[in-house]
Length: 375
Image (cartoon, rainbow, N blue to C red; front, side, top):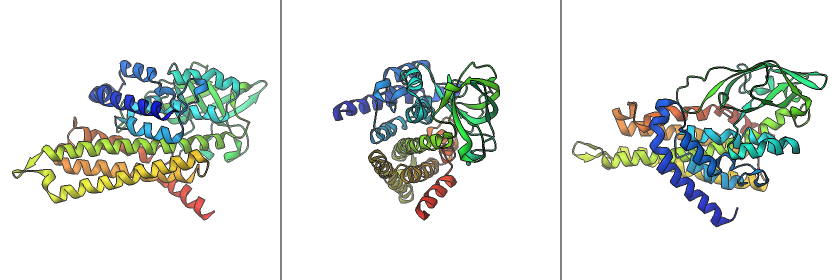
């Protein structure tokens, strides 16, 4: 994208987040829903397709541009990003990387326009950190495949129009897994009730059940047995995006902390004048600076092809842990008020805990990092 055009996009998103989304955060927390007017503006701004190719109606951002956009998107409640993040990221990238021309033509323009929502159905109750052990099956029956099994913690499942489903088509381990497009409404597909989570209200997850779900062979995405590789490629892209969202939210939490320290008085002085409070603020700013720099460098290396695996894992690991520490310090600076519902940093303290779990736990990132180095 032209430099000035991208600067205009960043400025428009920054204003939208601060002027329209942040004032709705309490409503989102209370209702567990994103207001429809926020969804509509996001559609009009192209946010449902910022990472999808221009030829399909997306913005076609490079990853270096995408992470800078996610710094701005991440400044609001995580549910805002979740609304369109999966369609852009782990679900949409399956089609970008492995879909046929017909699949891309049929689905990507609708995802980019926000007409439909995509979901990434990989995780199972006993196959989360190691998805190569998944047990959902897809058995060939003439010109169709019949899918049976269940998925867990699937983001956007209650709203999704299409699912990227990973199922075992033969053998054991990662080489026996394939990917399928399954449309909402297909007989045998059932969505469980939305999960009651610790945080990130407004972003919904649920179980997805497959009971004899029949799809044509043309619904397979990529070649048979390549599903695990397709999933890992999408997750590497998504991990860097999540890291950038963590940076954006850490900036928001730190801004809330500094604002409170400037105004709150104890013992006749603003608490920001006390050196131990200053130490907490300084630690958060230092880690935020490190996280932002790491994400930008990892995105640069990803775009150049120099590194598409190690950098995203390093960034996701550090930034998801970092934003948790920033949130913890914020609650400490707020003191008793930081433990009260209705205070932004209390909500963020609960929200950020999930970043260390989804799209690869911190422990999985440690394994990815160490094993690549040891190789």
